[in-house]
Amino acid sequence: MKEVRPPVIVVVGHVDHGKTTLLDSIRKTDVAAGEAGGITQRIGAYEITTPGKRRITFIDTPGHEVFGSLRKRGVTTADIALLVIAADSSVQPQTLESLAIIREAAIPFIVVINKIDLPNALPEKVIKDLSKRNVILEGRGGDVPYIQISAKSGQGLDTLFELITLVADMHELAYDPDAPVEGFVIEVKKDKRGIIPTLIVRNGTLRVGSVVNIENQDVKIRALFNDKAVAIDSATPSMPVELLGMSKMVSAGAWVGVQPTIESLNPSQQLVISSSTTSQPTGGTEGFADQSKKFAFIIRADSYGSLEVIRERFKEYEEIQIIDSGIGEATESDIERAVAAQATILLFNARMKKDIRQKTESLGVTLFEFSLMYELLDDIDDLILALRAKREKEARKVGEGKILAIFEKGQNRIAGLRVNAGKVETGLVAEIVRGKKIVGESKVKSLYQKTEPVASVKRGEECGIVLSDSIDFSKGDMVKWYLP
Image (cartoon, rainbow, N blue to C red; front, side, top):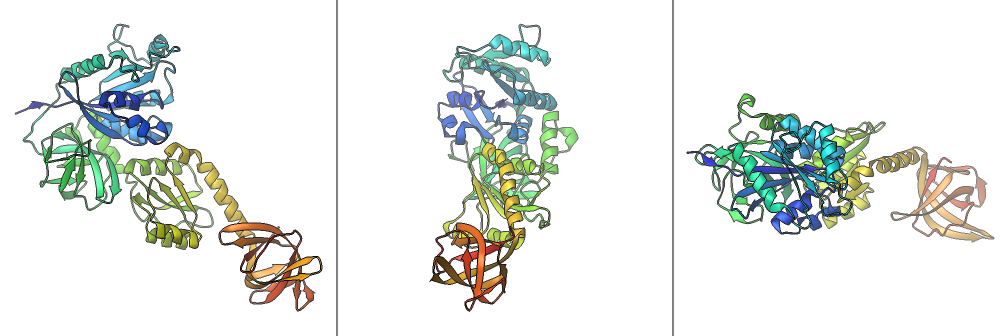
């Protein structure tokens, strides 16, 4: 027997237009303040009960431009979209992108004009700007419902709930509790419990102990947790839950249950199925970089969505080749592979144990770490410049040695050393390195072997070296020589 299914609402819009603050007000929790940098970085799904005793699930999506794939996945798993537009900013680039995704998914939407309590709020400008994009609101000659609110103060929220339930009732959302389970994975992460997908059921009832198929994996459910991290025995449609029991990684957007035919799905569901089957950003080995042309990267991220965004942006750089990527903490094998492939390790909200970090430093592996996605993506150009400069410097390197003793001769301070690789010549640039720290650099002024001046010294030989500039070198320091 069919029962009414609570609506799944996706909240979309431009960055900082108040999407997470809106959900924060709805849930009466401090989600917005807890986000790194105040910006939602991945899809979060939360269930609430309205004052009218109606259950609604909200999906919060990032508004920053780099999170287009996450917005699309959020919209394509929802029944209704809330397009949030700040009254003091009006229509912005990600507003238009969100609108395009909504139209492609063919789901109903409500325009939510937020921040109307601000002194510079111009809701009429928002309405006019939308009409220029062929979004005509109710009461203005069109049929798109809209509401003016203040997410910060809570003004208009009760009316928003009523509007959502009205739109949901018009579309007669229903499910069969006894039907085979159907649903979608909206996000995946990996922690000490293992691989944890977050999913929303569309039909049937998900129960602990039952077996479901997720992306061709038969998964026995060991545990279910609701959006408040409380263990539950079962999940009914529209309820967001975390599932324990996966043994292999799956894609965000993966179908849960018996794999359907594309023809049996609505346009929104077709989009999410097709996107999950054509993109697998969590794959392990991806090849070895051509070191003469590419900068090799090994990436570890906190979630599927984060990894997806990083990989998509890295595709824009011909100099970058991702040789491995995945969800979870960096391991010793990652470090060993980075050494073998001369790769850089990039961590986004991913852990690295202390002993692994020490090994990374001792082996000289380049490591970059970020907690804010927009900072990572804004810094890519600087990363490439730094790696390019490092490679160019290495190309000029002609040898290295170790200081074994220090002598004084008149005004000169002489470093007695052994050439361990390559050679040293007068006129080269000498870089003094102590541990991981560069002490300084100077040109090689003169070389001596047994008090006799020489022009060059080969590998395996010892010599005394005088630098043009005064540098406080010490016994045990390494010296690297570069072409000027």
